[in-house]
Length: 265
Image (cartoon, one colour):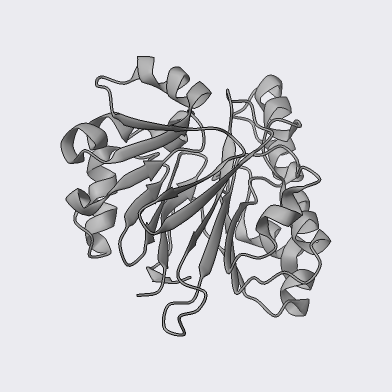
């Protein structure tokens, strides 16, 4: 069985992804209510009890809102680094089955190899993940790789080495600077946080990151974690149109609050 992936939902209000391999079904973040996550899983033919693990990027609620109830009801292993677990545990009503990893380490879970790497964001110790599964010598189960890269204020110099060789890349394109500036709901301090070096990637910053990586192996790129108020399909297209025309791989936009169908990585 090849690796399969679906973005259950993604925006500044909630984020979660589903990754399926021959021997694993895992979530990347759980930023919706348990009820909503269960509904999203069932829409994709997965029972919540089948989820073996949740991998947490950082403690913010749009990535962890469903952890407490989902962990209590369905008992998955919950992977996080120590700073994220310490920041999150006091907010939870129960204690999940924590599995602690060191940021920057590579570790295994069932038939998955997971590489964690530090990201610049205003959380305790935020990370991105690269997942790999398969057998290099097996024609019917080749190694497939996926990277999850959201919530970062800028692209660190070494990030290209982390994501160049993946088949599927999920990267945030959170906001359009012009729409953020005109937004009347957010005070100046929040706008500064969003656009700061420990905030989020703008459309242009995300596009610049993709263009900076020489000869990537990507088969597909998803633009995710879009702000509902401070981004739009038109703003995305204005920035990414040239790259989309030049690229051999499709660049798909996950609309704020939307998701993607389950498909092969």
